Length: 209
Image (cartoon, rainbow, N blue to C red):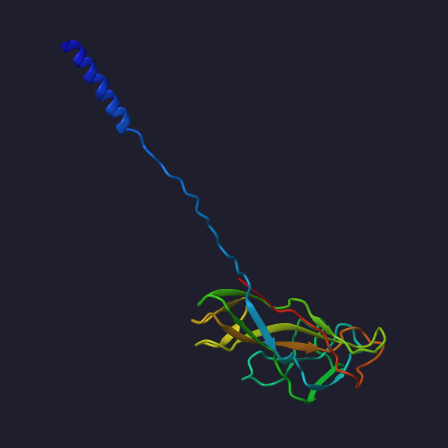
């Protein structure tokens, strides 16, 4: 009888251990989401306007005359540029470009909607833009606009910028762009500059992060 009781106790203990080791689990499924917004609020006002000029193309190949419009409005409005990459042959005595009126202006750019103190990449054109007048035949003299520069106008320390534009404590930034304008570099352009509709062209400014 004692032996049977011991066996019963052993079986009971084993069952208790088995029952106590059972784990009851519940599983729930949770969604994970994220929203991407890589957009930058990048706007501009105004145009790059060199005003009214007097111009004459050179009869010598790769020779031209250049005026510079600095991005910083605190500097002289327009200035003659003696050495420029826009003139492979240098400034000669034949080509002419002179400011004679109008109100030269720089476009103003603003960036917003970015985190505070963020470094943005600024890309200005690396090749010259051609300004031509509508209605003139092929071979007519054109202008080249290049050597673009930028000047930061917002924040505590405005100043020249090259490839990096930093936002302020509100995630905003503002800057202006200037450039040089050169007369036609081809030898004896078929048709010289005409007193006609504005010579115009376009260029791109890119901001990324």
